[in-house]
Length: 561
Image (cartoon, rainbow, N blue to C red; front, side, top):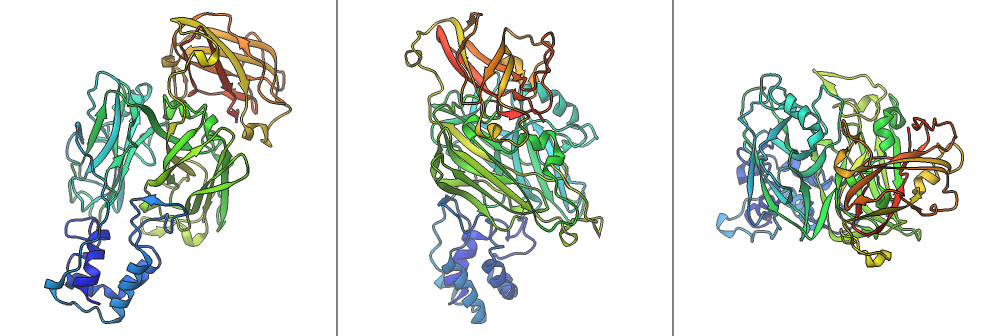
C-alpha cells in the first residue's frame, strides 16, 4: 500500500478541487510531502464522511455525480496511514479513477461580474452582482458552468433570476454602497429590503461542475428580467484579494419541455415567520411540510410553463437550511401509502450545500404528496461565533438573515403532460377567443388543516387577469381584471365543485385567477377581501385559453395566514 499507487489516484479525483495550490482549501494534498504531513488526520475525516463533503452520503437512492468515497477507498486510506504512510515509487503511479465530470458542450453567453471585487468581510461574505443579460426575446437556459475568478476565496456561487417587477430593486442596490454589487444572504434580495421571491437557475461549489438541465428542457428567461450572481467568499484578510468570476451559459430559443426549480416549503412560514419557531436553547426542534406538489401554488411563478395536470417529474433536489440546521429528509408518499425516500441528510452543514441529481428521475402523480422534514439545534453549544464571542441562544424563526433559519428544498421539475392543451381532449375546438369553464377544488393539506375555520363551503370571489399583469406577489400596478366570477356558494366538502362557464369571452392567451372562498361568511360583497384562514388563490397558476370552451381546474392552495 503506497501513496503513488493506491492513495494519489483517490486524492486527485476527489480532493484537489479544494486542496491544491491556489484553491479554497486551507491545506494542500497535491504532493506526497503535503499529504504525509497530514496523514494522521485523514482517517477520521473520511470515516466520518466529513470529507470529501457530500451531505447526502450514504444516498437513499442512486445519485449522479456522487462525490463521496466508497467504503473501499476509506479503508485504503486508513490502512495506508496505519502502515506509516509509505511513499512508494513515483514511476508506479496508480491508474486515474474514472470520475464523471459535468461540462457544457458549448457556451453561448459568458455572464461576468461588472468589475473586480475585493471582499471586505472576514471570514465570510455574501455579495450579489447584477450581470449583463441583453436578450431582447425570451430564451431558455439549458446549462450553466461557473468560472471562478479566484479559487482561493470562491467558496460557492448561485445564479438567480429576478423578474422584471423586482428588477428596479436590485438595480438600485447595485453599487449603492460605493462598491460593486450589494450585500445579500440566502437569495438575491438585498439585505436592507423586504425579501422578494427569486428563481434559482444554478448553483456551484468546488468540485461540483456544471449544472446540466435534462435533455430537451430549459428554464425560461423573459426580457426585462435580471440575472444575479451571488458569491460566497471565504477569506482570512478582508480586502486582501480580488475576484472576477463569471458564469458560462448555454441557451436555446425553444425547448421541448419547459422546466424550473420548484421551491418546496410551507408558504405560511414566509408570511408568518413565528409559525416556524425554533425556541432558544432547544437542542432538537423539527418542523415539517407535507403537501401535493402537483397543486403547488408556486409552480406558475417559479417554473412557468410546467404543466402539472398529469404529474411532475423530479430530476434533482437542492436542500437548504441555515447554520442551526441539524438534519433534513425529503420523501415522497404515494396516494397508495407507499413511501419513497428522495434525499436524507443526517448531518447538515450550511457550508456544503449542493444539488443532488437522481440517476433515474422520479415521477409524482396527482394525489401523491412530498414530506419535507427539518431539524435544528438551538442549544448554547451550537450558537454562531460573532466577533469572537459565542452568541447567547435566542428564539429563531423563518427569515432571509444570516442568523434566521429556513427549511426548503428546490426541486428541478418538468411536467408529464405537454404544455399545450388539446381542444379535442376537452370536447371543444381551437379558437382565437373563448370562455373558461372553471371548476374549483382544494388540495389535501388545506382540507386536513387544523387551521381550517369551518367547512369548505361558502361564497367565492374570483378575478381573472392576463397572466403578464400578475407578478409573484399579485397584480402589477395599474393592472385591471378582465373578468370576474362571483358565486353565492361553492361546496368543496366532498370534492371539486360543479363547473361554471365564464360569461365573458376572452382572447386566446394566458390568464391567472386570483380570489378566495369566504368560509366564515363575513366578506363585503361590494369590496370583498379574505381574512385569516380563508382559502385563497395566489399568483402563479397560469391558465392557457386556446379553445372555444377551455376547462380550468382552479385550486385554493392555502389558507390565508
